[in-house]
Amino acid sequence: MELITWTNDFSVGVTEIDNQHQKLVKMINELHQAMKKGKGNSYVENIIKQLIDYSIYHFETEEKYFDKFNYPESKSHKEIHKKFINDISVFKDDFENNKIMLTLDVLNFLSNWLREHILGVDMDYSDFLIDNGLK
Ligand SMILES: [Fe+2]
Image 1 (cartoon, protein in one colour):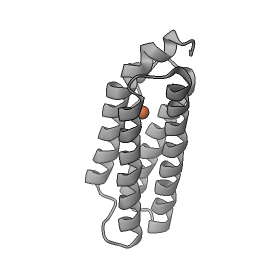
Image 2 (cartoon, protein in one colour):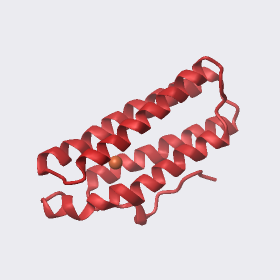
Image 3 (cartoon, protein in one colour):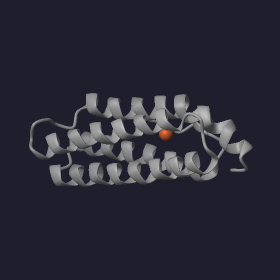
Image 4 (cartoon, protein in one colour):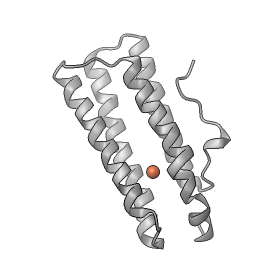
């Protein structure tokens, strides 16, 4: 079973962003699979790195539109992105230094974060971006 399943509830109504969110969902499920199958550390490390890189890329996409259209919640939303990248980078370093393992707790943190982020603050910009012509 997938740890996190994409449903239409997750759609912010902008295809580019929905596609990126789907990719993040997929990557978290890949991590979950890797953990369940007991894949080696280098394999897991690689997916974590990809997840960080893709998150950065995705946040840049959202923030590009915030800047372009002067989104009023831009500052606080950017702070949330920054904190997530910081948290997951700390996790990556700890994992690489064998301080922690990839556990269901970590995976639940990632999947809950993504779910709550999309359904919460991301959904808040949906109408704003659509009103500015995105689809
Ligand atoms: Fe976001």
